[in-house]
Image (cartoon, rainbow, N blue to C red; front, side, top):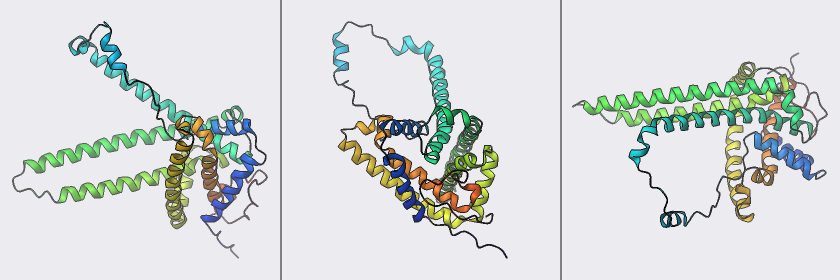
Length: 310
C-alpha cells in the first residue's frame, strides 16, 4: 500500500522559523555568535537597510572654486576617454563577479549557521567550497544569459518599432500590447528563476550535489507541486514588503545606522534568519532528501515523518 503524500503547508513553517530564530539568537544570547552569523548573512547578500551615506560635501564646489587649482576641459580628456570607459566597464564587471562569488559562497555559510545553530565562517567556507563554486558558476551563466536575451529582445523591439514607424499603413496598437505581454512574461520568468535558485542552495547543501543536479531537482518539485510553491511566493511577497517596512522603521529609530553595510545586517539579523529558516523548513516538508536537518538533531521542531519521494 502506498504511503500518503506529505501535506505541504506555508504558515506552519513560518511559525517554526520564528521559534527557531529565537533559539538560535536568544537562547542564550551571545554577541559573538550574533556578529558571526551576521557576517555570514552579509556574505549571503543581506547588506542591511541600504547604502545611504550622509557625507558633508555641501560646500565642496565653493571651496574648490576659491582655490587656484588647474582646470581640466573635455578636450584635454578626450584622448583618454575610450581607455577610461573601458577601464570603468571592466571594473564594474569584475566587481559584479566578485560580489556574486561571495554571495554564492556566503549562501552555504549562512545556511550552515542556521542548520547547526552556530556562528562559524571558516569551517563551512572550506567544507562547501565545491558546492559554492558550482552555484556561483550557475549564477554567472544565468546572469549573462539574461543579459544576452534582454539585449536581443530590446534590439528586436527597436527594429520592429522602426519598421512600423516607417510604414505608411502601420497599426501601432499591436506593438504596445506585445510589449506589455513580453514584460509580463519576463517578470514571470524572473520570478521562476529566482525561486529555483533560492531553493537550489538548500538542496545542494543537503545532497552535496552540483548546481545542475540541484536545478533539475527543484524544477521537478515545482512541476509536480505548483500550488505550494505559488502560495510560498505569494506569502514571500508579503514578507518582502514587511521586511522593507521594518528596515525603514529600524533605520529611522537607529538614526540611519541600520543603513550601513554589515551594521544594518547585524541589527536586522533576526529578520534575515527567520526568512532563511522559513525557506528551509518549507522545503523539508517534501521528504528527507530535502531536509537539511535530516542528519542532525532537529533544532526548531520535531523532524517530519519520512515520506515517499515526491
